[in-house]
Image (cartoon, rainbow, N blue to C red):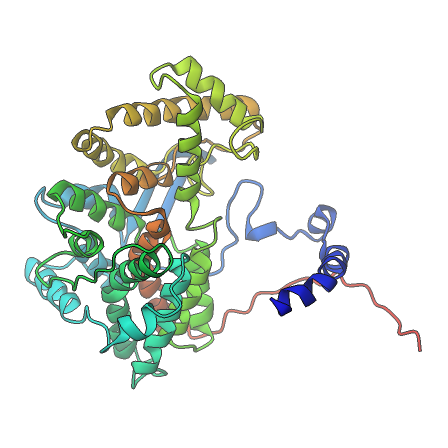
Amino acid sequence: MGYYKKWSEFADRYRQMCLENDTISDELFKEYGVNRGLRDINGNGVLTGLTNISMIESFRTENGKKVPCDGVLWYRGYNVMELVGSIPEHAFGFERTAYLLLFGEMPSAEEERQFAELLAHVRELPTNFTRDVIMKAASKDIMNSMTRSILTLASYDDQLESNEVDNVIRQCLNLISVFPMLAVYGYHAYNHYERDGSMYIHRPNPELSTAENLLMMLRPDQNYTFLEAKVLDVALLLHMEHGGGNNSTFTTRVVTSSGSDTYSSIAAAMSSLKGPKHGGANIKVMEMMNDIRTHVRDYSDKEEVGAYLGRILDGEAFDRRGLIYGMGHAVYSLSDPRERVFKSFVERLSIEKHREKDMELYNNIEMLAPELIAKKRRIYKGVSPNVDFYSGFVYEMLGIPVELYTPIFAIARIVGWSAHRIEEIIGMNKIIRPAYKSVMKEKKLNI
């Protein structure tokens, strides 16, 4: 308390000095040809490297012109929509897809079985780690809790600083395996110590898939339906990797390029992902949807739904920022392939959960929002729903608490981070050092 009281004496003054001396005008960015956020007016990122892991396609060249197209996401040369479609109905795809992203080849049935067994074998934490690390200083911010656990796991690794490829692969596989435990146990610790809920710690079952274990460890009765696990498995698969240009993956590669260790690189990526502009997008969608449910009486009335969406866009409703969350993407134009493949699974789950009316509301917003945005905004490319539009709805139907929405993203994305860390170590071997143009003015000391 004494710290905050003392700080309050200086806060206004320090804030004002920072505002005066750290503000850089749009005119200077234009004058020097520098793009804010490494993105141009069309949302295209500045090229900072090459990768063989994944690719996003949102435009095609026809007759020498760049034309928007339905989005395509590729993992190691395979269309993600086809990857999801190739998974047998009564099987799961997380483990097979993780193998593909990490090693660049589609596993045979036997290789997939061996890989799944390896992940199950290393899915354990050091003795008393849950008690001594995860349960100490429990926090509502599960991403911070996980990051602390990741950095603490480094102290148990005798080969911490070795960046030999086989050692990095071992470290990455260990982290991929225990991420569901770090997330779920972190939530249970928070729920018990901060919300006075019951405490239960279920150990993972080596016979279950990653998605099944996640649901089993989370729920008091350990029960789940096959469809619940199937939909969660698809969600994890679709969030594993995304073109290499996203903020947290770039963070992974920047830290890796400095020669730092695996735990530090993944912890840095976690710190990036937790930002609301990156991994927390589906939470904003859920907050918006709850607000819409409060103010719209008839979910099937397109006119009523459209009128309220218009109020949101005009900054008159919800958080008054004029945004319909879950609509649009920095890269995709006509459609997000993850949303297109995910939607059919969401519809199936909504039927099992008797949430058809909510599904109808989502469908109407998906249809109406792009039209309204096109009318009210100056846009340079198409607007369509992204995967975050539905992922929060799925997690809600699965009974997953909001505090775990972004951690579940991390449980999936660590596979992509690991693949990029390995590729950076093998293929680049040069520290990433971007340049900044200084617009500082020279000053003279008054002595």
